Length: 339
Picture 1: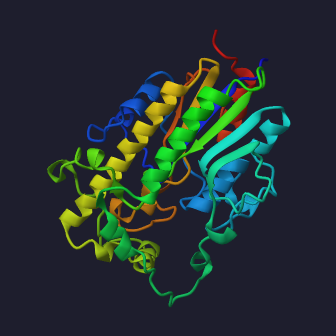
Picture 2: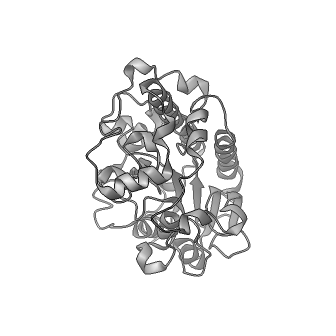
Picture 3: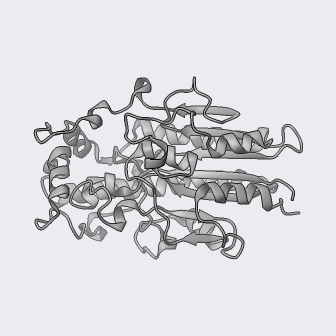
């Protein structure tokens, strides 16, 4: 079999229900819909963990977090366990990342041939607060900021996503053919629609409040005690004073999804004919966005762990695939470029 080339696009905190190709009439995602129409949309794809850092480690390694030891946002992947990046690089592929990794450090061998504008955890440590346990945990202090930043505008993350899209386009147009004949994988990892829920104005205002529904379970009283405790600890919801504040945040979230779709369009336009595979996935579900439900309900319902997963290839071609490592290896090893 002739090894093939592959582009993997990752989003973050992306609820799979909020895409046109999922049957959603509200959120505008014409380019993701185009990708789904030409290939396969997986309706039952799930992340291994509803928090960021361990989910990314599991995505890299292809195992559950209890099997690999990267448990928390303060326990980032360090390259010590072989990933699909290592395996494909060892088989002769160029494996290049562009954008957010949330690993420990660029000083580690994370398995990539090159890491372009990577984002890793803060100071190689990550979220140390998340390691704490106890019945008297003080609430987090970032809920007020989350509510305050929701709305139209730009953030460091929207600027960063445009830089990621730019760097990926340049690589596809100028580097993909060098050296000739060597297969490659380009892993493009965006931040959107991860909070802050500050969306570019040209997308934010596409979602007027009268069209935005309130979450079905918002501030539901009859919840599991774990859900209630988690909500009290994060403290997010108390800073959304009324329905208008919730809808402002939702408009920001939907606008970030459309902004992601816009960046994906640039990649689709730049993809070469010798790229035979493209996969879009999401490492962390939208349950971490508090106004979408009652709180961060870790592992309670499908909405917490469901993830969008799209592939250029047909369902028949991918019938044997049961995880993303197998998907990446199947596409790069067995699907030759089209003539």
